[in-house]
Amino acid sequence: MNRFLNSFFAQSICCFTLLCSLQAHSQLAISDLETERIHAKHLVNYLQEQEALKIKLFQEFEVSWKVTTDTNDFVTYKREFLVMEQLEKVWETYARTSPSISWKSSRSDLGLMYDRNRDRVLYAEDSIPALQPGNLLFVNLKLLKGLYKMATAFEITEMSREKARMELSYIETGVARGKQSILLKATEEGFTKVTHITKIKSDSKFRDKVIYPFFHNKIINEFHKNMNRLALSSDESLYQL
Image 1 (cartoon, one colour):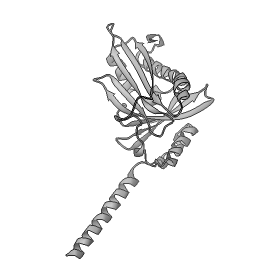
Image 2: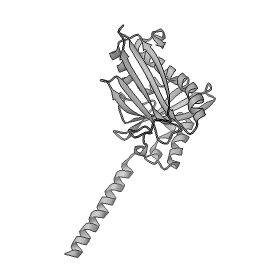
Image 3: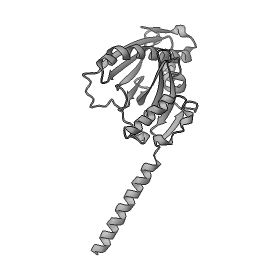
Image 4: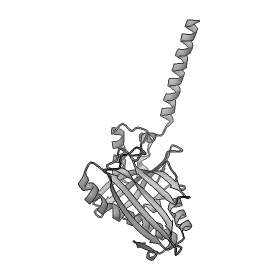
């Protein structure tokens, strides 16, 4: 009887280990990427650097902003815009526009998107559905008129139509940690106020307080102008408050 039980447990453990191994191998790995479909070489290098940090699978990426995050040392930036359109239409524009369009500007563009919920990658030229929590965006940043390029990645952690709010958290292994929040609010005139709040922290206070806001503000200004353009086809309808 003991020999039977020992054999049974040994076979069970073996099967369990095999199933776990098959499940791990079935998940999408960074090495599975079709790198020829990623237009920015520095983004490919960035993803390969993640492998050096022992992130092999896309599912292993973690957000840097969590419920337990100590926010005392984070620097906060706030920008406000007024869009002369009703909140419902503005929200639909922000929520449903493909990130390959919304992040397309002289200072940024989408490299690829990872859908955590379906364990799949969509490239910039693919048809990307409405954004939802669990989407990781890998974005190319073109600074100093394109002379300096870098990559960044963040995950959509909240898309709430009821709250008219979306949140994006930088990934844990990025240069900086933190999150960005975009809040929409209807005004008395029937327009929409868009508030973009960024909380950031890196290993350099000078970067956080001087370098980061200078480039960050230019990039998000173009992002919001794109959203406005799509909602109204008129740059004149967007005002920075």
